[in-house]
Image 1 (cartoon, one colour):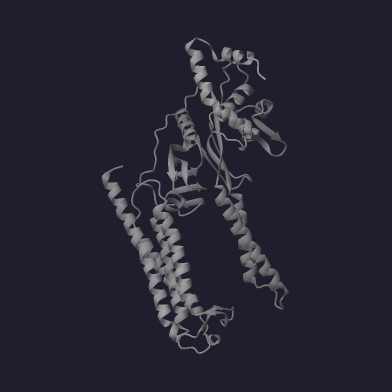
Image 2 (cartoon, chains in turn orange, blue):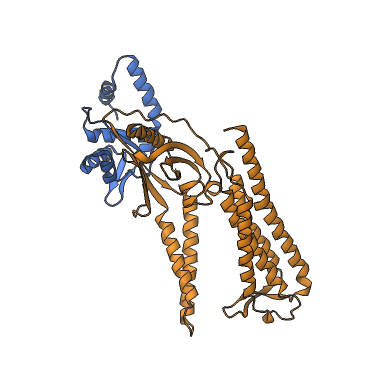
Length: 340
Length: 117
């Protein structure tokens, strides 16, 4: 870990903080102020939702917009950028600045355009039911989001990294004929599990209720509702399938599989080029939790903290967060010695 | 959990597997409430028959370190936590015995010979 590497990383971190935390927050604050300033020329009750045909069908007090802009826009930004900036285990650790930057740039572009645009079209209206069809603002928002996401992706730099906490682990001492296996479950924390379960359960249940209500109507439930429900079920299934991985290290190499057997991954001993213990910060390094693919390689990241990272011949690194990683790495190093 | 077996040793394989698990429990690397890995998985990795692994698990059950219920696998019991607390004392005792030329096997016999309750 050289001085130069640390300087580059500090610079990149500062740039990320300015571009992805402070600028978006300033943008959302400015839009909220503009919306507050426009309140005198807006109807007291404004349209906040438009139906499928472009007619306004949901209404709320005029302060809804500044509240939503700052609450949702600012909140999302602080959540993503804050976790990426502050939940970091080492100064030189890998990051996902470009990917997260693109997400934040796009989010700022979309929400900013829509929140501001939807207020501007209602300026001077006497009655919010006359609010014009505003789908073009959604279109514009998507264009701005794509543009800002691209700009952020190009502007942000992904500096070189060194892995946090590279413990010096000696290969496990094993007799010539001795066999060993290391097995451990990688799982998310109890709190995270309950939060995820509740969120998924409640949203899916909510969608189901909406479906039943709409089915009783004359036209039945729309395809959009059915589609959302189907998507929710797929997401729930995938999330539940991946709350636990059984990680195994033996003479064959390393494998990880979910209780239902899919998804799974196996790396043969002969293709493992390195093995080490690392400290993982999910948002900063992998842009989130779960089965991740990105600039930091493949990750099975169910929580923050200790994990195994192996180099794979001809492929990206594989990281798995799991307890007692040191023993696993010791055995992996012994297995590599034998395979060589 | 690290399980290791050495076929060149005289100790039967099932006893070696049980000793590995016991060692991990004693060292506090496996906590009460955790599930032992499926016998089939362990057997496949070590190249032994899965009945051998089950035999080891049954021995641990007889000692009260794990609880085995059909369909739920082998779960480490609260007794394991108590055993882990003795870990440091036992290590000291083994070291002191070794200084006096007493082997762990002999020490175990001595422990068994002490009347309790």
